[in-house]
Length: 407
Image 1 (tube, rainbow, N blue to C red):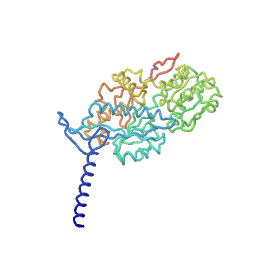
Image 2 (image 1 turned 60 degrees about the horizontal axis):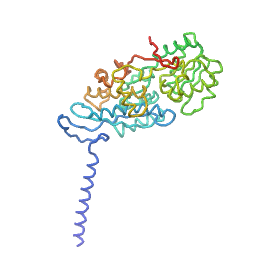
Image 3 (image 1 turned 90 degrees about the horizontal axis):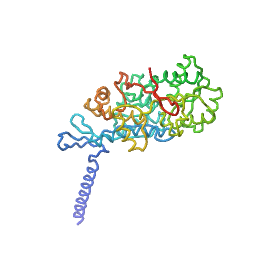
Image 4 (image 1 turned 180 degrees about the vertical axis):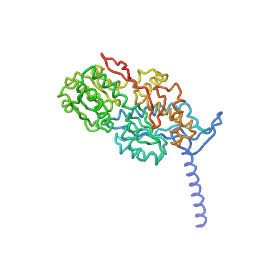
């Protein structure tokens, strides 16, 4: 009887293991949000469905720059959703969908680096987006060895001056804004300027370039400081100090929300001059904080995306506003178009997991970009990985944004 019991126990355990194995196989079936090695032939097309491609994102999703990070992520996510809802995209006879894996780095470059390691190890992401230069530079330390493509939403020229062959800078370089911003405010308000930009390395580099040009034009810097938006929320003291020498112009910038608060504080303290707005901050987002463009009278910055005239703009605005209940700015728009470019590059490269091949075919991706998603003018990518664009600048005059010509 003991032998019979043992035999029956053995059969029972075998059945349990068999059921467990069946359950585990069921959990790995293909859907739009999971990776899978299983391939199947899709109906009517003759192509094979090969699961999803994970795309990484590391940016500030908490803290003072959270809105900035979320808007960037929303652009990437919206592009992925549209591609998936259209049935995915075909690469070398196989259908793929996109899955965005996002991690919070609190705007800290060391956190970006750690997040990138995690994304590579756990998700094997061929592309990782980041919306700040510090994060991009941190990933450049090891991205060529780990073989992933950096999609950097930053206007910091240094990102594409490092000879990193797997980096793409999505935003136009800020160096193109120095001359038109300076000439406009100097002509309209005067030659004395006070500096109050973000305390990041990006802010320091912007300041250095602006200071050089401003002084060459006969201007004078009467106050030179910065604000750490990750630590400071009350700007009364620093703005008061900046206004002591009666500047004609304030140079401010960083994420839109705290930058708007600095401008508002300056007006409350009696400042009547103009503002040079770093390209990271957006006039339309600042207006949402200040309540009107009157507070921003004389400010010059990047022209709002909604005022651009490109084929994909109307549909993009309508769909984004319906999905996220707000008007999109460049954070969302340029990252939206960038993911579409990368998908077109994957198609041309016939690979979804080879960053070198994808990078080699980005120009083809730009050339093949469908008109319905063209919301910005990106004619080419440079050899060092910068998306070239024709700059569009706007200034607040009499409570309205007007176009300013860029030579």
